[in-house]
Length: 103
Image 1 (cartoon, rainbow, N blue to C red):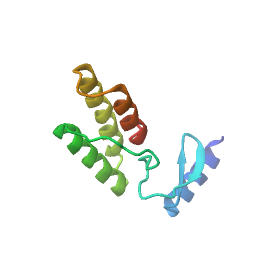
Image 2 (image 1 turned 120 degrees about the vertical axis):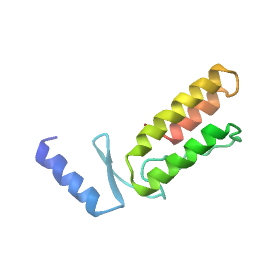
Image 3 (image 1 turned 90 degrees about the vertical axis):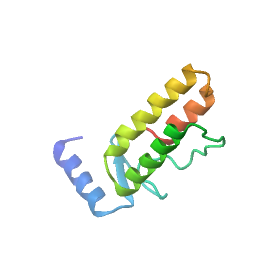
């Protein structure tokens, strides 16, 4: 894709909140969030307070369209890694959280 096409797609995305371009694919955003995958349901409790607060921050950044979301999404992955290594989280839980909050 040439540069002018990318710029045009970016301008369309900026003008229309329903359209977004991720990894070169144009898609229609149907949900409440911009980057969070709301199709993935978290079907387990999140007991760790630091992880819970990081998820809340991540959701607020997403709603605001703030690119700090991506730093928070990375922090979720790092926290999950530490919780998994300590035996406080399963691989399934880690995978679900990373799928819902992609970097």
